[in-house]
Length: 146
Image (cartoon, rainbow, N blue to C red; front, side, top):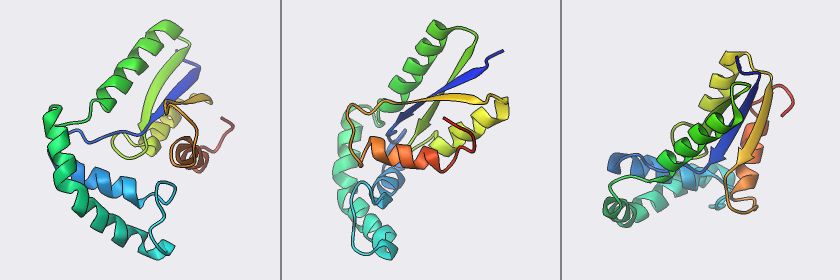
């Protein structure tokens, strides 16, 4: 039985053309990505921006198969890492802006009884709009040391 968890964190992406709009809403609702006026107005402005970008974004996703490849790539990486690490580890995936969300992955880990988590951001660089936002998010969810 696994005694350690590895949590791979990534941005996520829409898994269908119908998911593009809510994905964009999630993305632009994050004040670490873009601050849109006073905090109480962020959700309103994010919906406006998502609506303005919806057609172009949907068209682009349609060109690459109607979905983001990031979710499948990250899951494949997780599976391969788990195979390499062996039975002492379970590898989980948490996405910031689409399913499976980070909080879902944390609940899954907590459900296993595992008390040691290695968190690995798959963002290619550090900035408050990438690694910073997942670091803050994960820090608010886990009640034991990471």
